[in-house]
Image 1: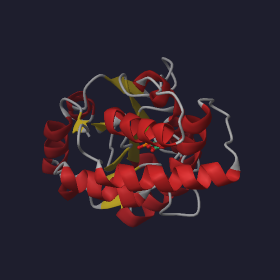
Image 2 (image 1 turned 120 degrees about the vertical axis):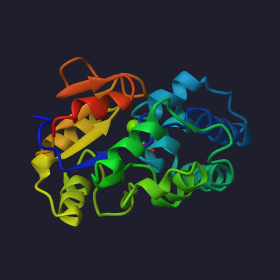
Image 3 (image 1 turned 180 degrees about the vertical axis):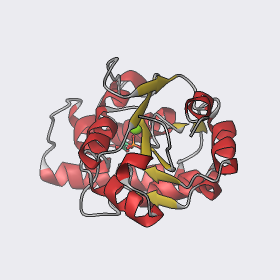
Amino acid sequence: MLSSIEALAFDLDGTLVDSLPDLAAAANAMREHFGLAQLSAERVASHVGDGLAKLVHRTLTDEKDGVAETARWEAGLAFFARYYREHLADLTRPYEGVVEALQLLRAKRLPLAVVTNKPAAFAVPLLEQLGLAEHFSLILGGDSLPEKKPSALPLVHTAEVFGVSPDKLAMVGDSINDVLSARAAGCPVVAVSYGYGSLADGDADATVGNLVELYDLLKNT
Ligand SMILES: O=C(O)COP(=O)(O)O
Ligand SMILES: [Mg+2]
């Protein structure tokens, strides 16, 4: 399944970078603004993965399916966005092995993309601030196209841009949205064993604990 891979797409939060400390700080600054109690980083992690709009609903209500009252949600979204934009990379760092793996994959001349549900206005400057942006030929945020993961659209679009068939584009991610998007697009999918998504064994075609292992998996391609 992972043989003859011609391009890769990476999820961002929980796969390339551990962004939880800054996401939790932004969520808690927003909650403090509304006089709400602080949430643990673990609670915030459980709310990450479906883009900013849902993250604000969930971190205001502290419920996975929570929907905040409209005026509060709008004010929360504005607060969160303003705060997070200023603190994208205070504590956020690439996971171990990420920089090395990206260098190795680029040396193999594989085109690389980021396909994240994070809004592009956060994803692009975050990657720039961490010195990672230069590795990617394409960065798609959750609002770059009409549909985001778990839709197939971002990966179908990536395959088109790279001029490869979807079955030659491997998706690498930490959450079920990454797997569902890859399955819908007909892409092979590699899970990371860390991150925020808690994927079950067998959800993906392969699992790696460090992205350098990816290079070994693809070695024969
Ligand atoms: O910001 C999110 O909702 C999740 O982002 P991700 O798709 O990079 O995991
Ligand atoms: Mg993720």
